[in-house]
Length: 296
Image (cartoon, rainbow, N blue to C red; front, top):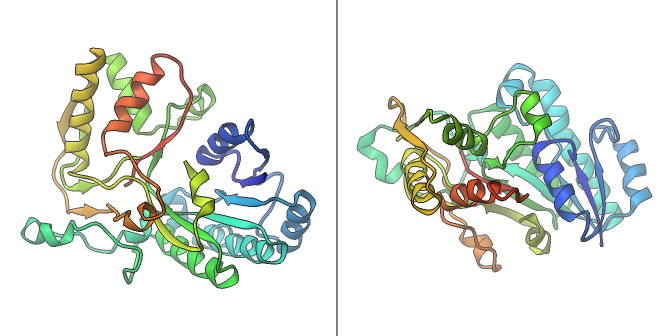
């Protein structure tokens, strides 16, 4: 099988490239190798490699950049995605679009009086009105890709994390896993919100799915504060490493948890929130290499 991965220089794309390169014939392209906002260039590149599956990770994913430069991010996140879908429709390539749980981030949160209703996991068929530019662009990209290529699989991914490489650290990047490791090694305190509800969580199974939109990642059983306390406790009990967790000042409730029943009906299962953090950090102690996800 031949697999093409866009955004191969990014966080997710680089890890997929590393994960699948010994299993399939894989071609990873970054923005220097392929400008997928140019449909003619994209057509030539896809026809040259003739992939069976194209996993589209390329995006302007920084929420702040999307807010500041909406026209540039639209060209990449929406136009570029639609170009790839049109090309895949012509070449008969299965396409997996990496979307985001940010499509569920509405304009207003909720206060604690209506928390029970507000905190119900989101389903794929909800009528959405995302507030962030990034969320709006990802939702439109899903719609345009499915219109051009009904077999396209759109994955609403949770917040992804992994142990960062030395190069990523030198660039100043950080994520949940690196924060946990730093706190464990330096014995510093970590703060998480009790009003931010998130879930923690392989894309290979996804390209066997019928076309459509799928929530893809673990759902949460509590706030990110509660889940990280649980992970820290598990870490201390199992490997004797302590991470100190405190509750951050309260803000408006934010719920990006997702109902993953649709994906689960096709045999795809996700780990419980909190467990992957313990697994990641303990495996890091033995220098293992892998990637995981956490929703935001």
